[in-house]
Image 1: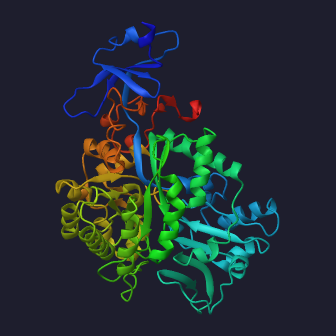
Image 2: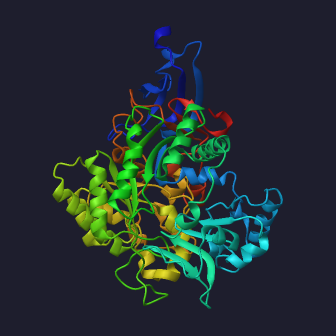
Length: 539
């Protein structure tokens, strides 16, 4: 009957609904943006084929829900679509030459930015470039070199624009880098980054929307249908709204509005005032999840209980006073928003749980999952048990460990690196855990993350194999557990009638793939809301 006709019908070797106890199905029908029906018989939904129905007859294929990346940075990926692609460099001269080439086509005085998804240990010199070296690439443009979300290196032009001198006070929770002679070397870490980044002009809106379109397509091509972007400024969110209006989003976006760089409750209250217009969360493609704080640094400045292996006088950096953070977090939750806080080192994990415990004591009855720990990198058994007892969810990012293990061993030593992201321990305690990439520090990709969590493989070999989990467990951390974190269990995460039609098709069964074959496996199709969003069928 025409009133039952589907817009999309998939016949496959196996449709894994991820409903506990339900065997694989063989057919799935989509009507509008929702799953209309599933059937164990590959011909069981043929009565739903009509004149408008697109049919994919794929008897050897496997169908899974689309994945969520619960901690990533789509905004940075969108910038990277147009920034200087320094991840291609293998030496500092090559790095500088890429910047030099961009300078030839950039008007004098305009900013030059680099991509963020690179590691200095991939350069032959195994270090960051310096301001003096960037000056040799161009002294007629301010240059911002970003590596991940915690480190900037700028040239002398940019330091001069920002008014940074050797007498500039170091912001609490930040670092202004110096060379061996005590002179500025252009490096800015954590709370020192806004000294320069506040000067960046707003880029062209159309260019940014195009960057988001390209970046979202790249996520979708790996099987990711929803991203939880964990550092979105109010200006960034305005661009996301414009991209949504233009039909340029290829993934759903759940935004954490960034409080990074803020240090007081008053500053956070101003941010919350700016967020008031975004409370309507009815758009299934784009909505605000909550507010993002950072408590410690990243690879080089995570706050640890024991001193660093490379510097026995250093134990990382806290970017908030704990008492002030209690007040700031409380301001957020009292306005009805949720909180995600970066805590990487074990000292930061302990202090964050202290902060959350105090907020819970002062605000009884907060909805479950209101306050989330982002990373929990070095969370040990005692702190994992505390998090579970407090009802604090955690997001983990195995791709971050994979890509940065060598860097981190230089700071923390091999024993601590092997303890990072203890997925097995979290799950055995019954913790609420979900998974992501932390791009640009780790590479995004549905099966790349699953492969990492099941093998504990890194760029320097297997680290902490006792923390590995099974394929099925890893799958849930990107699907059913991810939507639980987002509070969207009734909308997504399983392939059942009434749920949004977010699904992926794989020409090989990922469960049967091992090693590099699983790591590099991408779907042939990714659908979000019944729409094909992989690059050959972009919205």
